[in-house]
Length: 295
Image 1: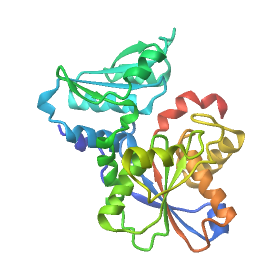
Image 2 (image 1 turned 90 degrees about the horizontal axis):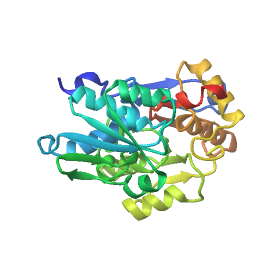
Image 3 (image 1 turned 135 degrees about the vertical axis):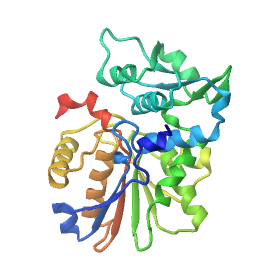
């Protein structure tokens, strides 16, 4: 069976209304890439799709990829390989724990073989990409030029006419790079904004320029809530409120920070009355496995 038979493509676009979006008098829409698949969701699928379509599937017999202990990419790859009936191995950063967390248990349930390596060894190999000895290596998070090709498709599924701004969370920049390439290909002038979810002034903006040659996006780097995978009481309270108001669950690592940033940009006036705003829900809800104690 084709993996696309398991996926909801294109994903829907839903308009949502909250107290703060109503107060700001904006129209807020969410591109529901979280609904592509319960596990292979959001930009996890988008990046994988670009990579898998780039390589001839008859030239490899196994997929090997990399990630941390709570990696959404790892479990999405494991689920994809189960559907595709391809053996897969996950190279995990750090020592093997006495007990696997929920994400790694899911990886095993989908048939992924887990190999734990030192942080030093991981850092040396985690960007490996390509086919070697009939094994397809996919870098951590699917972050590579081929990964951007799948993210190109996110905005192809949306009618952008009359849209004022598009927002997406950024961890590596791969997703927004693909979206930017789509904008360039269509000469669409809709402003594209990234919310950097990790510390580092100008980190994502610099990578976009140096790695992908992209200069036509705006990156906000002040909404990381303490750093990558870090949270704050303000963030967690916001996610709870947003979920109860809209029925849409955000994750605490990426989309929660993005949506909180959108709220704050409404308050600051960067997003103006009458603006029509699209936020990309990049999935990653398995990120809650490591954060439930903070609720």
